[in-house]
Length: 391
Ligand code: GMT
Image 1 (cartoon, helix red, strand yellow):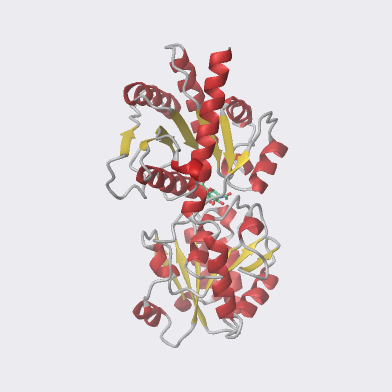
Image 2: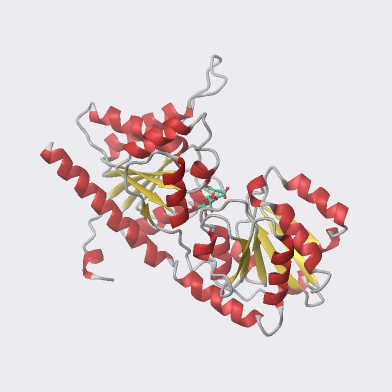
């Protein structure tokens, strides 16, 4: 640990995120847990307990946003309840900073909370982390765009999880401020290859190769490409496919498996907590997404020594180095993805790709990335307090 980091002042931080299985919620929760272990007081403010907030630490707190229904409301105003909760927690817990993950509606709720607190003589700095679909899909829709642009520009600090997402944000919105890139990270104490031979034997009794995909089964993940690649691959390399996760595309994908006659070689595992156990016995991870700002699931696979065949969308080429940790291919190019999968699974290539996947993942180790957030918090806090004292 360097001199500066040892001296990082301990902060009281409010973290706002989606509590579900999505990548942004996972990153926010893991970041909060890591900061709490370093002595910061972390207050999660969400509508239910974040899925990965699964252990006790004296520095971790959880405040539930209470959205009261009323017969008049077809759409209960979550954003107002969230802003009110942010005001309440900031006042009562004397927070130093609010860090919101995923712009919609967290950045605009934070703006509202900040203005309310200002009217009470309190200036709370707000940092917004952009995760992907809040920019590339939902955020640029005209029904949200003006609010997203305004609330990003009003944030005191903005971070994006990849260079590509930063560029996309500047391209799609009129952003007048600097965006800091802080990549996602992985906890290699949890995501590491474990000995799970019995599990591998149960799924691949004839020593088949094991292919894995995990996601929230949304359209943007292109899971039909996973199935088509697997269909072609298994004609050349005996293999099995595990699909982990759940979401709106699942029944369509099950139907496709039936049509292709691949059902006996594909298993749907649903939402699993211990993903690292499945990854520990995998030989290849597929991520053919249409858009992907970073690809956290691929990083977790790489940390478990699993090479990745992904699309080259968004920030994926910043993570998955083509020809080293796996390959990146054009979106929808099922032929090329299959060719690359076969190349990786070749018995003499596979150990090299596995080793490379791990070495690439180590560059995103949690202990490397969390200090970037701590330093950024300090920078934003000093800028805001300098501005306040000069103006
Ligand atoms: O992938 C999703 O649909 C979930 C989404 C989220 O915000 O929860 O994930 C986004 O954020 C992750 C964490 O920063 C990134 O690793 C994912 O690449 C990104 N997803 C997309 O850009 C589609």
